[in-house]
Every structure is written in C-alpha cells, then in structure tokens.
Length: 392
Image (cartoon, rainbow, N blue to C red; front, side, top):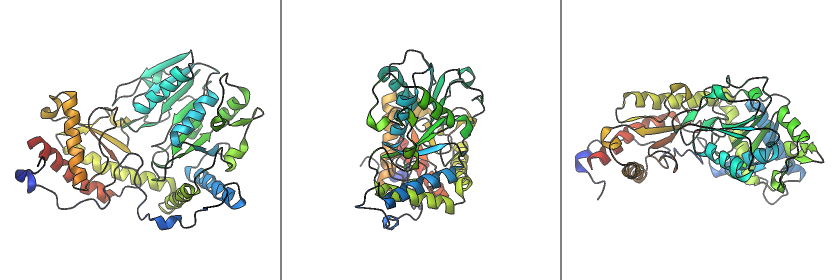
C-alpha cells in the first residue's frame, strides 16, 4: 500500500484530535453542539409571522450587541452567504466614482472580476499582490471607493489594522470580513460596508450572509442610482430610501429558520464564552500553539511573509523542505494531496489542503470553535505525515 511504511510506523503519534475538523469553510461547529439545539426552530411557519420576525430580529440584535457596532450602523440578513452580501454591496453602491480594488488571494480576485467584467466600471485601479503578501496600502486612493478583504482566507494574509484608512475619506470602504468578524478587532468607523457569513468563525450553517452598513453607505444608497438593472435579491432601497425593514428582520427572500436557529445558538455560545473578547482570545490561543510549532519545524513555514499580516484564523502553510521545493508545481500539488489524504485516512484532520487556486500547501483553521488541545494533538501528526510521504 502507498502509505504502509513500516519504518515510519513506530513514529505514529498515539493521541488524535477529538474533533478532526479543521476546515476553513464551512468551519467546525461550536464545542458541545448537537442537533438538539435546533429543537426550538420555527419550522412550518412563515418567517413573516410575529414569531418568525421575532427570531430574525433577535439574530440581528444579538449580532449588533456582541460585535459592539456603532448605534447608527445597520445589520441585515441577506441571501447567498458572504458572497451574496458582497455582491449586493457591489451592485448597489458602486459606479458613483472611481474604484480601488485590493486583492492578494482568490476571493479578492473574484471581486475584481465582478467589478471589471460584470459591472464593467471604467475607472478601476487594481492593486494585486502575490499569495503571501499585501499590496502597498499607503498607495490607496480614498477619493475612490475601496474594496478589500480584511482576512484572506485562501492566502492566510490579513490587513494588520485599519490605520491606513483615513477618517476623512471621500469614497466608501467595502470590506469582505467573513473570516475576521468575531475573531479580530475591527475598526467599524473605518468600514462603511462589512460582510460575513455564519459558517466561518461561528461554525454556523451556510446560505445566509450578513450585511453591515454604516451611515455613509446609507447616504450613498439614497443619493445614487446605479445605471444597471437591479435584481430583486439585490434591492436595498424603496422609492429612493433605504428599505429599513431589511435591517429589522424582514429578509429579502425566505430564510431557513433552521439555519437561523443554529445562528442564534452560536451567538448564545459567544455570550457564554465572554463575548467578542472571549472569542478573540480563543483564536489567539489556537494561533500561538500553531505558530510555536512552525517556528521550530524545519520543513514548514507560513505562506504569509510578514508576521504582522498573518491571519490567526485561516493559517496557510507552505512546505520549505528542499526535497519539496525542488519539485515541479504539479509534483508539489501531488505531494501535499498525499499528506492531506493520509491525515484524512487516519481521521486526524479533514479538509486541510490549500485552496484550489492557492500555491500547494496546507491550510489549518484556528478559529474560535476549534479547541486548543485539538491543535496541539494535530501537530505531531503533521510531522508524521510529512515524514511518511517524504520517505515513502
């Protein structure tokens, strides 16, 4: 058999993670989760009933309180996960002025494709960095609207802070923050639009996105009408004014009340963990364990070059062993696939291969729903798997 290496068998670790789920999306459920938490879901009822609206409003209110949003920021539940929330923002807000597109990983590049090839905006500046790096944030023109990803899930690179965003900007900032919300401190007054999805840091279910709008974004919505047709699922205004009902729980389309119940359970867990600061501490604790292992492990390193911009949630790793780096790109991809497959067969780690468009490597989720002892148990297995594949 391909992995039946007797020489390496004695090195196999004896302790496995209790939860081998380290996927960067959908991410693992919260510790202690079971289907029983969904027993109170409002099934077979209209989401527009009083009971339905109450559930949706609770989800919005809990979100606002836990994220400590400014009072004049709106929170809405929208269709199609973080992707849907970002698409709504792009289609509804852009076109009034030039646009700056920042990208250093797959999803940022996807937003560039939307703006350049779908919306076909004329004045677009693309600031693109290679995987593992950031573009020069000091060059960004904030007279334009600026679209960026706070935390690059497929590259493991994040912006270190919001200091590069001026308070007196003329354009809007539109931030895809899906693997940062509930895991990192976000400077909300610097973000005119932020989006995220339930299945990332909170380990919730997919198909629903969250759209957070600051007052400057609302002003744009009420003063600017894009020249292109607006699908029903993207419409945030009614007769030239913001449709406030969307931000009170009257969703644009029918939500899954089963998913809503799961999201409410996750938010209640956040409260039990000490709120936002409690989750940030959990993320940092997980990341420090992985970081310490990387620093002493000669065959692996962060994909992110600068320590200040390394993501603590979606940690992307590259193999730096000369045996690996001397291989062709195709061979590197095959080797990392063998490592990933071996760990899955051992039921030690699921779904830790790098994103399909990223350089060959590993990607380990260190978000708040991951328990630190599981990260600690995983690390000897990573060494074992690499050694096994290298010598095999």
